[in-house]
Image 1 (cartoon, helix red, strand yellow):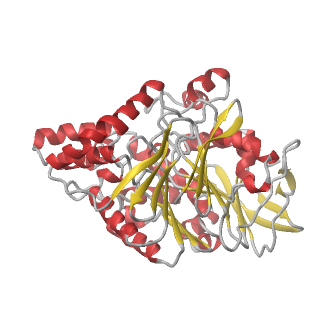
Image 2 (tube, helix red, strand yellow):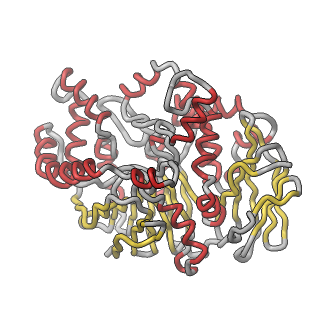
Image 3 (spheres, helix red, strand yellow):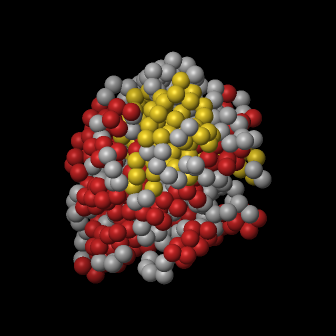
Length: 515
């Protein structure tokens, strides 16, 4: 009898449709029964793994409960678990958007809770069945590092050792291991149920592929000379397409997707690998970014990793094609913009200056010897945010400041949470990180000292010494930093609340009005 491997995951949802993604143990027909109707799709196969995404269309009301059948045998809901419901988005858009990033999948025993803290997303999954309706998020945005391919949990390391002794030891090597990595990350009972009933939209960051992914041209050259890397990056991007990106697409977008059509016609391992290889070598061949219109709110999720232009002296966070796309999305009619960027746009101002300075030196501003040292520093302490691609930062800043309407930039990555406000325009940087991967106490104090203390004093000076012009606008961090594991909710139009978990209980850390 076919069985569920991962899922069901409620992915794309709007006011009239919903899409449910599953991975199954065998090829089969997946049936979703909801609201007195049945919706079906056959699985497709990639590298021996079987997937389906089923579209529920022409919906007119919320679904109180749905079931999943594989070749006629019911496999969901599980006994003793709450029903999985589908709440359609109101025509005027989501009311509550939950977001966060950086979630490791280590066990939940006492030893790992001591080192990694509570998994706040898991705690929220346990809390939600008893929560009031107004507490339910309409949408969950996962802003990067959904999995850690370069730092797997102990169970994943055991799996790797059970099947090979080749390099890379201690990291993911191929699609098979990526499939197991996602299975372990997404099948904890509370996480599995949460994903079955709250719509999710996702974008990658570096650890979904590898730490410092595409930080610079020297980094790419170094990795290209690593024997196991070409196979790894192909597996990483292919797995991302299957497990994360496919569910980001609307039913209409998937119907027009040539790769999905190819996969539905047979075992598509070779086709997926060829697609992923080209996406890495020629980023303009594919777009990972996407946008959604929700009433007066426009959501724009930006690829800040694969679409980079890394040419020394002309670095860009987004290559010309991606930048042109972003300009079009920003210009579309909307009352407000929500921009998902895995890495923060607005850092503490001092750190911004340090990253400007490092980029200039890595481009040769102070000579060849300093350039090599600066590149080493760039990779060692992750100087790769928007500030380290200054031309793109300035361009995006001018674009957003000139809009004259609220822009809410949601980010993660930095392993602490904060709010920054631009002056004088209503542009806000809202950071929530990590969901479960806290900095040590030593690194917390080091970040406070260097990013909010020392860097504030020296960052601007270093940037001026390198001849870097001042940014086109000012901003400041007004709330935070908070270093706890956290998720955040954006209650539209203007309230943000960060939550932590202690002993499995979810409680607020701080709440701010964006005014």
